[in-house]
Image (cartoon, rainbow, N blue to C red; front, side, top):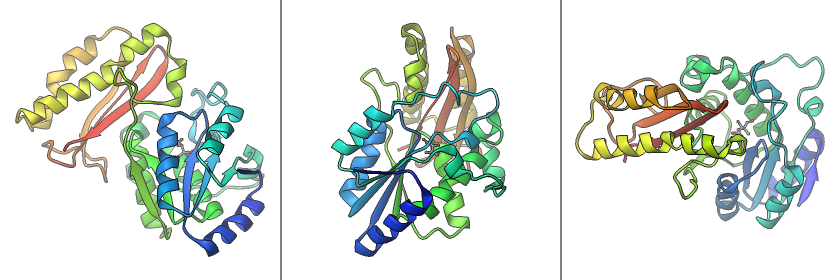
Amino acid sequence: MQIIRTIEEMQRLARGLGRKGTVGLVPTMGALHEGHLSLVRRARSECDAVVATIFVNPLQFGANEDLDKYPRTFESDCEQLEREQVDLLFAPAPEEMYRSGATTIVDVGAIGTRLDGASRPGHFVGVATVVAKLFHIAMPDRAYFGQKDAAQLAVIRQMARDLNFPLEVVACPIVRDEDGLALSSRNRYLSREARGAALILPRTLVALAEKIRGGIRDSGVLKDSQMRLLEGARDFELDYLAIVDPDTLLPVAEALPGTLIAIAGTVGGTRLIDNFIVG
Ligand code: PAF
């Protein structure tokens, strides 16, 4: 696996790969776990060449968020990507990605202010800007993202559509630990107690899935059935429980097949998210 640090070299190599076959891109911020590796494996199975990126994007972190303490595990990330037979790893410095004097941003509009965009103002401008840049730099035919970040996925799809990127955005299923907690780089911040408290996220989703299977479809009734538990939970602060259209992120009156049910909250100072699509 070759490690590339500059945009110019990455674009030169990406052009070469694109002439030979299909290119799959797996953008990450590092601190890799099985969720990321599932994206890499999917890309490996569907594309002739795989490009992964590791870049902790300052533009998508708010002023009081965890940019400085975001986990950085570059060497073990490289070993894992090497094992998965990634061809190229693009890992630029912040000064390379955002050259001095750069002022252009990508704003997807209202969709970027919903769900996580409501509680993290500016977050999705940062995500859309860096992902648009990565698309221009790696020129993939397919780009792989985790379904765990459901709002991010909707924003990236909107951006790719609106800006006519000639590529397919591929969503990959959430990978969970044995206890049901969705894998996240931020799980490593959790103390043992906080990890226990975090299980309220998947458990709420399981309870809602059961209710829907039992025939309850009304979004208000479904949300009300969980609110008392969520608001009374120890060591957990609910951000949102949302029943929405997965493309627009707007609320829907009924949880029908294809509806996105998403939850976010803070446990021991760590913000976690989870979701499922109604089957
Ligand atoms: O999901 C992530 O890790 C990041 O938001 C992404 C897509 C790599 C953009 O920085």
